[in-house]
Image (cartoon, rainbow, N blue to C red; front, side, top):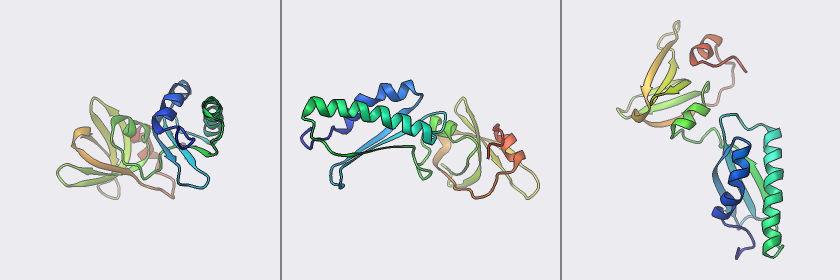
Length: 175
């Protein structure tokens, strides 16, 4: 800890089991020694969304563990700890990302250059179900092989999704 702060690898090693016990995995850790005060940011994700209570609980546990590590070193590290979920701008790149984004609207670009905007449904056996609306009246479900997706990004929505669209995506109307 030359900077007084643990490395990215040390933070992951220290916190990984604690986050896993809570049902989350660490997707990334950023240790920013140039910020004033220095900042340790832990990005976590799981099948259940991170709500404020969970973030507070994980932050508290992480703080205790990091303080113990600091005390074992020289006890002089001063930093801000931030625990958060990946932002909506994070590209969906793996099956677990698509599973965790189920029910969200996304822009999906396929290997052939075409793109689809639709509501993400279940993933199963390398396939992603996407609810699309090819015309103004009907909803349809398309099965898309995950290996044909080159890019996918969740879209920000400001209005309630259509209940039929959510039903076809396999999620209850939670909005």
